[in-house]
Image (cartoon, rainbow, N blue to C red; front, side, top):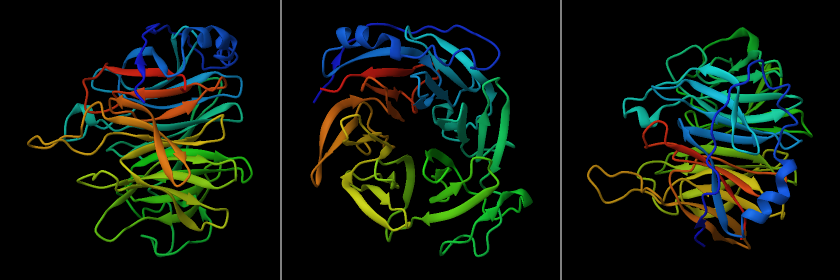
Length: 361
């Protein structure tokens, strides 16, 4: 189903110093009725534009929206809140970014974020800087706390062939360097974060203080290179995450995996293309976000623009909810049931990213 292009408000930026303690509570819940009246089923609006490689979006329990930008040559990585009118207020700025050799449109830096226990937790991707592949916390007063270096923890037998015991992260032994931490999800029943690493292709379990890291799984498939991406905790307590097939990103080659509480892994959704995020909706249904429909026919081939989609699991298959999205990276459901998606996240000029709000059809 195509979404109708309803541009009802373009967000601007304002700047408020001193963390986000005063911003939590200025969330989106207070304008639910106004948005429902303005967005018909299947429509969307642009909430904030001029973003620099937007990444994850997440909500605090009161409805406050937090947005991550990896940054660009014009702006360092940062976390902001977004108020009901679309204004951004900084939570933490100046986060590092790594310009890849493929150009500024592929900058790597701040990736996943998650609100937990009054603070923002997040992960930073690969790069040639001290905070590369780190998990961190930003407290309500704006204090930045590095927690775990996820490429510098010791484990017997890594690269892993089988699960290992819990690992104390304090020793800092270098054991595996090609990491690119992508996303994290907090599991309330286990008081731990599950982290997807798109470089080493493994899933880790990390304590909130960053001191304990456990290896959960590593993915390799014959003839393909399978890459974990967006991750979420399901209502059944299992872990769900995307698996991105490697080059040439063939249509239908991706998978959504399910990891049960005993860490047994099964395929949950097949025949999906380049999944970058997953979420459970307020309707109790499972949703997946596709970045693009593989490569185009150009030379050299590029990922197809404006081919991203939102899918909903139906029985053993999926149905298209929204399509025509340009390189979407992440999504999250707000308290009113609307879906918030970052687009133009890669392969576009800096300052062209957007945060959009979609109402399900």
